[in-house]
Length: 179
Image 1 (cartoon, rainbow, N blue to C red):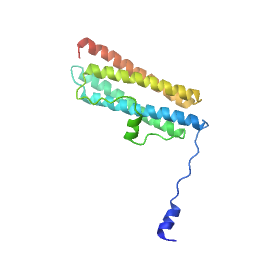
Image 2: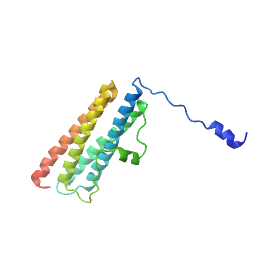
Image 3: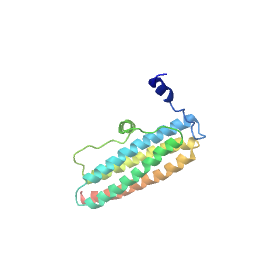
Image 4: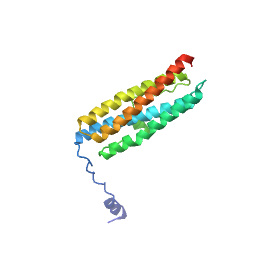
């Protein structure tokens, strides 16, 4: 046996892992697809929120800057939970920014200038879109009997509602001051 053939014998693919759940493979695939879409959207919304945090200007700079930063932190904190939930069920999750970009439904904003009022409204709309996607994923999890995912998503829905509410209230202030 040559050195190369010895090496080939030792390098074997790891056996497939059993799905560590009592959910059906079909349910795992459907839930994983929904959660991966949410994960991609969360990354897109996180990055857009940080973009606006970095580029906001005007008389309300400080309060909007802090608001956007706090909301970005909240979004980022959910990413690990989403990905780990997919893995916990035995599914695969995002592997790269390219993979994330292909799945995201939240649109990027690469404009050189966005007014603070437009930032608030755009993020509010994106959070509303997230609520819709979160509720759809919740429906999938619930119909599959996946209480763990459904419970996690209920917390994330509440977070999206709170972010949207804060953005709405801040946008009313922006509309009144014209900024």
